[in-house]
Length: 347
Image (tube, rainbow, N blue to C red; front, side):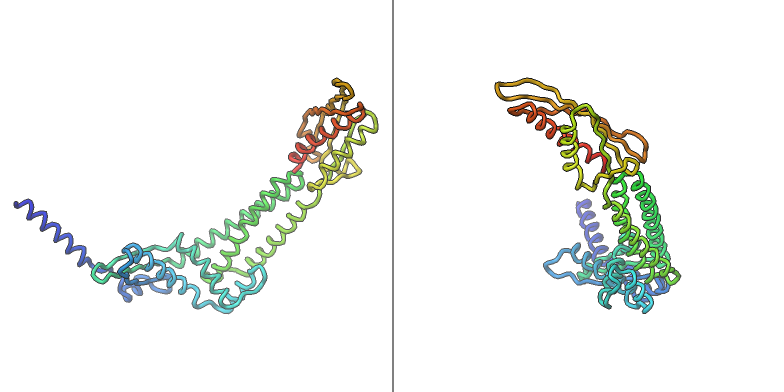
């Protein structure tokens, strides 16, 4: 019996502690002002009354949203004219209205709450009110965005150098990947600039804006270079007659050009040299139908690397009422196979 009463006593003590839990100091405005002064912290505080249909967790979540909104307002409410000019200058079209500027900075600030802001939440059982405090040191926020800005600069600069080198080496796919990296980091750089001109009075935004503008031009130039045709030169040896050489050349030309590739007249100006060694091999006949194989040895030479980067042998069977027609069909089939592989190698 004593054990039963003890358990009941413990239950009511626990219940009492829960009901009459001490309200945290940070719920008091003066305490917040003393411990998180506005000259060194951005602070957001909100209380939310739970409705009968809501859960405790839902009420806490609502109070967090409101507190973060208050923190964001602290950063954005006193944007200076110089800051507005800087934010406008960094935009892609060079213009924002007042509402857009506030929205731009607010959207960037939302990232800060993920990486920097500390969160305290408390639910008052007696009043059914949820309270949340969020705060972030101004120095920490500046440091975070400066590091993100420096990282974006480093990534963009490194990718630019790599893309330029890859274009010269005819490594088009790698160059495109590096351009994609630049395109991914430019918005991050833009976000950092927009944020830093608001929170860091020492941030040299003129230099940042110039760098941002230059990088935007750089990536456009790189993309333009990538769109220029790769120059090819085709060599076919004399192992077949001239008419079949012409057919092989024409078929390969029609299939391989139009994919950022074009033919140049001078071998020394080519990015790649394609060498073909064809042979026609009569297979059999079936009454009036002739069967022929076109066997073609292919090599692809990269003029920048000064080396052969691909070799392969192809064989295709053609059929026709005459040997000539069978030869032509076999050659046409073989060039389809060759062109498919070469296009993959010269991208």
